[in-house]
Structure formats: C-alpha cells, structure tokens
Length: 301
Ligand SMILES: Nc1nc2c(ncn2[C@@H]2O[C@H](COP(=O)(O)OP(=O)(O)OP(=O)(O)O)[C@@H](O)[C@H]2O)c(=O)[nH]1
Ligand SMILES: [Mg+2]
Image (cartoon, rainbow, N blue to C red; front, side, top):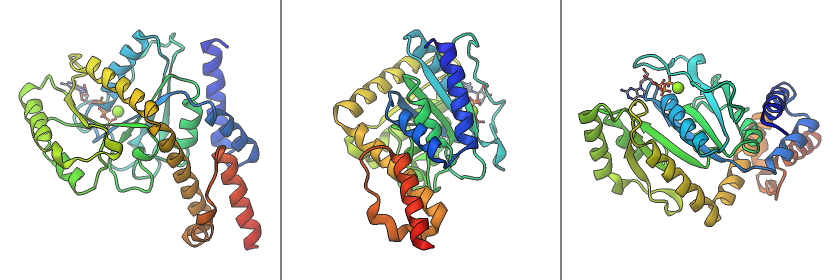
C-alpha cells in the first residue's frame, strides 16, 4: 500500500474508533493494530510555551532525512482553562503536505488533567503500527490518573530556561521523572546554561526506573542546536528498550493501566476491586477488556 492510501486508511480508522468506541468490532480492530506495533512512542511534555511543538518540528526534519516515517499526536490543551503558549505565539507544525510519511493528529484534552484522554491510548495503539516513530505532545501538569508516562515508551521533559521549579517538582513527585530532560531555547545563552548546570548538579536526586541513565541536555529548535544529539539519544534509548526486554514490560503495563482505568470508569472503584485479580491477559488487551466488562455487567444484574 502506498503512503497516501495509508494516510487515508489511518484517518478513517481513527475517526471510526472515536465514533464507535466500545463495540466488539472496534475492539477487534484495535487488537489487530495493537499486535503490529512498530513505532518508538516518544512523549514530549512540559509547560505551555516551553517549545515542545518547535522541538517536534525540528525532530520531524531529522527523522525524515533518515527516511523514517513519523506520526504526531498533539494533545490540544486549548480546551482547558490553562490555555496554550504563554510566551509568544504557538508554533504550528510546518510540514510538507506532500510528504505522506508524516501524519499529524490533534486530540482535544477535554477535561483530563494530564492531557491524556480516554481516546489517546487507542489512538496510539493504531498509529504506532503505521509509523517508525510516534511523537505525542502534551502539556505536563502531572497528578492525573493517567499521564503521558503511562502511554509512551520514552519521555522528554522540556524545561524553560530560567525556571527553577522543575527539580523541586521532580523531587516532590509532582512530575514523574523523565528519561531525557531538555532545556529548550538554548539560543538564550546565559539563562539556558544556568538552568542546565542547576539540573546537572542535582541529577543525583533523579533515579530513573530500570537504570536508564537520565540524559540532561540543552536544545534550540530555532538555532538547530542539540537536535542531532537528541535524536541520537532517542535511538540509543530505543535500542536499550528493545535489547533489555524493557519495551515488552512497559507495553504490558500500558495496556493493563488502560484496562484498569476503563473498568473503573464503567463500574466504579468498588466493582474494580472485585475483578482486580482477574486482570491477567497475554495479548489482545482490547478484546480482553470488552470481555471482562461484559462479564461483570452480567454478574451484577
Ligand atoms: N528563542 C527561541 N524561542 C523558541 C524556541 N523554540 C520555541 N520558541 C518560541 O517559544 C514559543 C512557544 O513555542 P511552541 O513550540 O509553540 O511551544 P509549546 O511548548 O509547543 O507551546 P504549547 O503547545 O502552547 O504548550 C514560540 O513563540 C516559539 O517561537 C527556541 O529554540 N528558541
Ligand atoms: Mg505546542
């Protein structure tokens, strides 16, 4: 199938999973794509206006130069009160419309705090079977039931130069510890250097899961500084995830968390406690979810 056809097919699927969610047909379809996952799912998060979209634009260029295909899910926070970029205009994705190996999809954050709505994971499940790399942009506010850390394989946390709060947030658990920390706008030399050295000197407080050495670096999307280096780190990270079998564990955890959240939503915390022990599955998480929710409904009636 050529890339244009693929793009059209993908748009149709995404539309249909939003309209027909929770039907057996859609859950079968989701499992079909779930089984074909190939992309490295990269979450890019950070406060409004920090430069996430600009960084994604810069990454897209380098990814395409390498001839890899790339999908982007931009979780749009504009529907929430906090609004969009506070510091200057919001960057749009400036991609070549004739390049069918780039696909950008916006999802409304609705009222979910971490910006991850119920539809984000099914959308990721489908899109990661279509592309080599899938990037998800969210505004990181943390403290929500499901956040970007629960649906992506690697997390880049963007820090505004001159902001001193980040480390405090991490230490107090308000934000999860990311895999890569990027101080953005490094063309703003002095501010950026200070923030970078603050973060580096405190890195001993950051213990990442599974012994991944957290990378702390500075980037400038505007001046193209550090982008190649960031891309190289992402490739190293992908190899590390695959070679150490960590990807498999992470993906199982992502599936399980999504199922748990959906079950809680359908039958509440009490109902969830009754079935918690039953949540063991090997594959096909969407069919499994559907089966279990229906079994509970029958049992409860
Ligand atoms: N000097 C400088 N400005 C930048 C850089 N990257 C982004 N900006 C500016 O910062 C502003 C916000 O950039 P965005 O990329 O939209 O930031 P964002 O984090 O995606 O913003 P939201 O999606 O609204 O949360 C824009 O005015 C950009 O031009 C950079 O590398 N250097
Ligand atoms: Mg943005």
